[in-house]
Amino acid sequence: MSRRGRGKPLRRREPGKFVPLVGRVEIGPDGYEYEVRPVAAARAVKVYRCPGCDHHIQPGTPHVVVWPNDLPQAVEERRHWHTPCWTNRATRGPTRKWS
Ligand SMILES: [Zn+2]
Image (cartoon, rainbow, N blue to C red; front, side):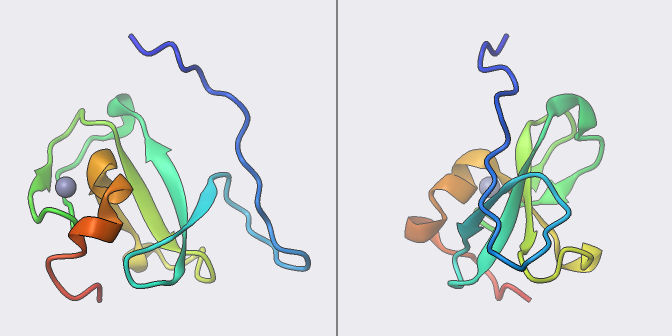
């Protein structure tokens, strides 16, 4: 369906900072930097709660997973967002405390 293809991963690594994950870095609703990685529909196999709208992300829904840029190993800090919710995070804001 999508003709966007994969494209080249955007690399915005800071000098001297090793980020082992391929993705992009964006500023989250709390002002910190977050690694953002898209999750394809085929890989979305669980139900997640989106912090942006407080609704569930159903399996099979393409979305994004984000986590603190300085804590790439912090699996428990990862958050799954609907893509539009993440895109509009600045105007919507999280419905609950981030942590
Ligand atoms: Zn959402």
